[in-house]
Amino acid sequence: MPKKTASRWILPLLAAAMLLAGCGGGSDQTGGLEGDIAHGNAEQIRKDYAALNSKSAGSNVGVSVSSGSPTATATAPAATAPAATSPPLHPFAEAALAAVNVARSQARMCGDSHHPAVGALRWNARAAYAALLESEWMLEANTFGHAWPGGELVWDRLTMAGYDWSKADENIAAGYRSLEKAMQAWIDSPPHCVALMRADITEVGVALVPGREGSAYLSYWTMVLATPR
Image (cartoon, rainbow, N blue to C red; front, top):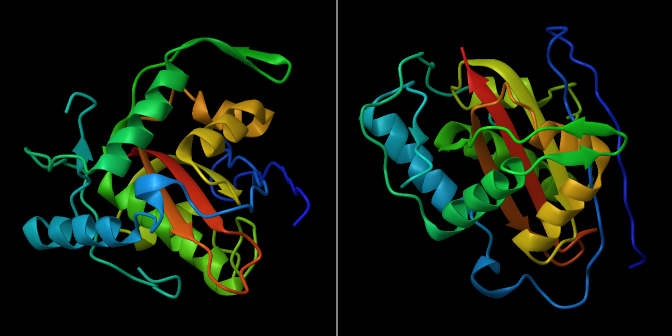
């Protein structure tokens, strides 16, 4: 399949201070996903999300730096207080969080705009679940984009995941075989780079869903960046 890219800004629908970064796509369709990420991280995200809901329904749980279904419409309600303890990061989450924070630790140009280094993010299981909803929707719909048929965007998916958000952003990509290549594509794309370097974001979740026979892409990536209320 020839290389395909796309990028756009989606202006906030609910608050003028919010900005949703556009989609980032690429085609690296020779072979499968690399190494340990061959099956994506959907199973682990669901496991973490189920454990989160069973322990404290509605908490926004983040993991410190040191350390569903695309048709879903509702989940447990969200609360503002984080849990006192956090589960250990699984390998994909650890690698994704590290890659995000390495990128944020360096000042960089995002297109024509300069962005200073910004603080590290925490992994959040609800943000990761919101990312999974988007990646699985793209797979099931065999499409690539932010907006669902009903107009739902990242803040709607965060609400579905029980995340009480104040700010939100989303980067998507398709076709990349490794975390490194997906991250580099986002860094190289000005709107995705801006989203990645936002100083007002504190938490992140990344979902990877492999394509299947008949899919337009061999992989569907979503990064959800958010700050709780």
